[in-house]
Image (cartoon, rainbow, N blue to C red; front, side, top):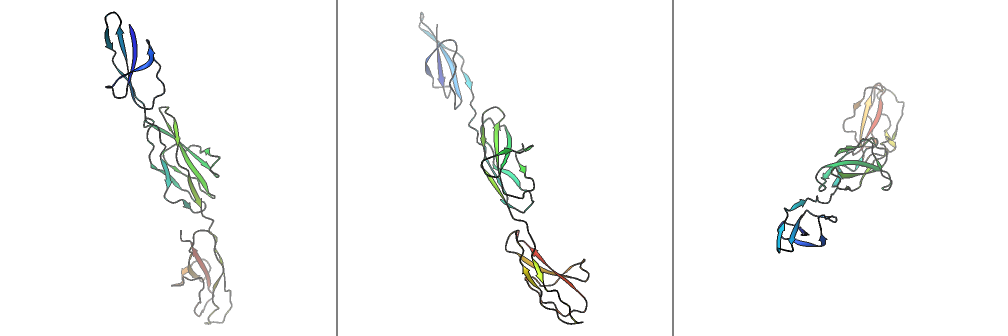
Length: 232
């Protein structure tokens, strides 16, 4: 008998595999689902019979998907929630995840314990870059997501005000004004003046929302302070 191996991509249209005559056959690498069978020829009787076809299922190439964050800018010493906005596909449909971090987009390292489909960062004080290595749990290779940069706003530092004064009873003190502006956070800043009789319990000064404030006449010693508010 002569055993000729055949190949098909649809289990209908068959062609001989050139040079593959024998009892065994080692397929080459496959990129799509493929069917195989053996055509057996009897030289004496000129008969031909075919084996039952068998199918080798090939999973599609794995694609890691894409990660993102609601806001790529976070406040100093805050965390960020990172999620997949497009899910992994291919590779059999079952995946494992390895989140990685780098400060330079080159020297990525694994984040210990970060192996789920989403990740909340540690508290950040400097810019960091993240990515995920997605692997097929069926052994069908791996792929890497996009790199996601999380930027960190500088610490919000309050400014200083001037205006210490000693006045007579029921007199009007000098104007209070901003001496040095605040820094960090996110501009534009907004302002709110507050006052206190004892320097401990504070109340808002109505409509006093500019960097300077002119108090009215005072009958008691009074403390003032300016609250700086970052836009984020």
